[in-house]
Length: 157
Image (cartoon, rainbow, N blue to C red; front, side):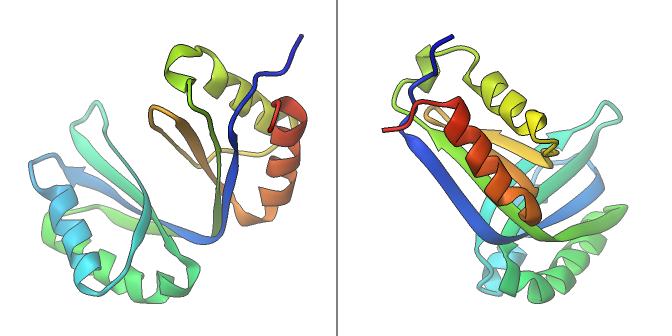
């Protein structure tokens, strides 16, 4: 089987993942939470949000590891204001991404990426995609193995 050609691999090694979980679904949850972090000059480098079948919001984001200690109390205050059940975090997280110009027309790329990570026993904590990028939040300790797995799996320039 020939390797799928991609544009490259992006890695962001120095992150923490912060999740605000169990929020009653209503408009403005993400805005209120992200604005509170932004007012403290905390940059958000990854966002994933979903509503479960019980109509509860779950908002997970990544911040620079050095911003985590400042972000936790801000997230906890925002969580209390919006009625969240809990705030959880993973201190040592990283993002590994693949990108390419034609991902929209290439079905199966995400599955191939996830299989490559699984083959190295790397658990994916969160996933985000765009037209040209597939990004995975993983534990920071697994970043080197993840990059190596992707290099072996895909055809890089």
